[in-house]
Image 1 (cartoon, rainbow, N blue to C red):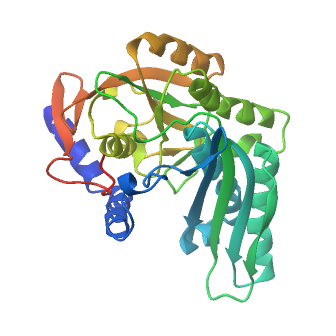
Image 2: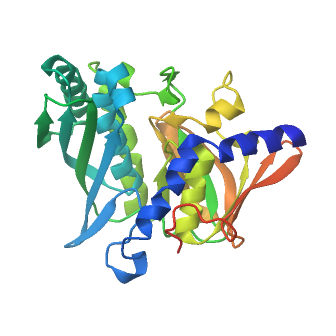
Image 3: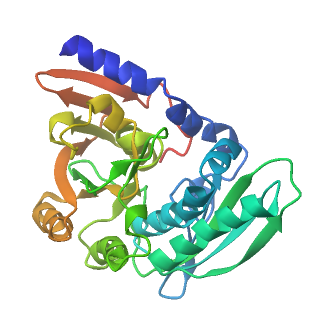
Length: 323
């Protein structure tokens, strides 16, 4: 198992998705640091103070290869992943705008159809954007506005808190991409309302003071996302892979490389863990306490009887948004 764990972590450490997160460091070096502005940089959304709460602003971009291969799903994902970012911050979505570049009107129509289906499924109106149907490529960018009364952030995980993973396992792979899709099959059905109610768990946890730190599991996978949360909060983490929620027939390497349509990591004080798990599980969401926050600034991983360090942030920063 030791050799297996070493090989697993080495593969994940060298993944393209994690390398993309390291690319953020080049941008962070050019922007004001989090402690010099009222809006902290490096979170899932920009949290803009607004009266007794916060406006949340975020965006996602999709590469030509993905948009060309799956235009409807790309449009759908434009809403799905942005609403996930809003929920990860303890918020609720208000509206989205999009920018579509395509070679033909037919290609654009498929993207926009997916975008509108996603908007209908998640109850978020498309209120404007930009269109270019005479482009040399097919690309999509979607921005979202939301609002939170109380925040979940990437900066507020504390040593001693428990790390929780909540993932909807009622999905399927969207091959050949590493997407675990527990959403699009419900589009256009009566069950689609369930997706909106599932997202509602996150702002309710924030408003009830049960958690203060969270991130949605991104293309960097569960360990990469935990590492991003640890870096922003200036903490370390211990994670036990054996108890990570996972479909029975999915190999560990593939699962830890997956981008789930509904997947979050949160931290909480030990006395609040049971209530948080119950709220997810009542919605049919698999949720487990998978580790703990530490003072080490390392991400240490256990699997069976073996333990290895995945990443030491004191030696190698990831995004450059450290606390």
